[in-house]
Length: 222
View 1 (cartoon, one colour):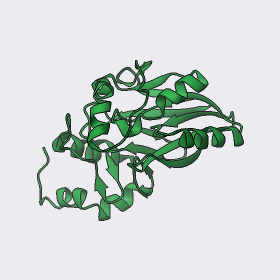
View 2: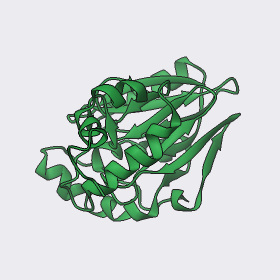
View 3: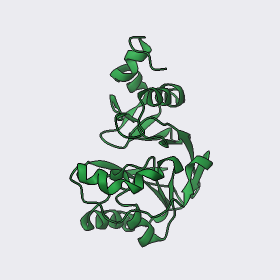
């Protein structure tokens, strides 16, 4: 599986294009928000001879949804999101206003409910769908075992974690998600977060202060 990261919109959100030797691709967390960003994403897809088959989201916050409708209209592909996060689509315009971000067309429906999937496929690639609530109620992480690649959205960042003070957020949930669901995948797993640089689970175990304070029993999370 090949992975490319394009950073879009004023929130500097990481949009991932992932594909394999079939050239079928999925776009994870499409954050492209302007005609220029739409063109940049389309140009990347065309230059690599890719065929988009899926708009796939880790969660429903507006900065990760801004480009989904462009993908659906341009390529006629389905949109996959946890049904637990569908309410966030309805509040996207309000959330964008708070952050000073113009909100264009949002998807009107979720085509594939990730609550009903343990795996999701494109080409010859199979991604495990791992529920990781805490940043949002329906947040999922996506894991590709062969390449040890993990897309964590806004659950886990390099040496940080996602906010839990937004509607539907919960600190206990996000820490359970990280410690019980993600860290057991192994130290060598490469993490592709929704914002900021890549990392590994091994690095986060050693240097992420939110994780180390729990592992050192300085903070309780259950």
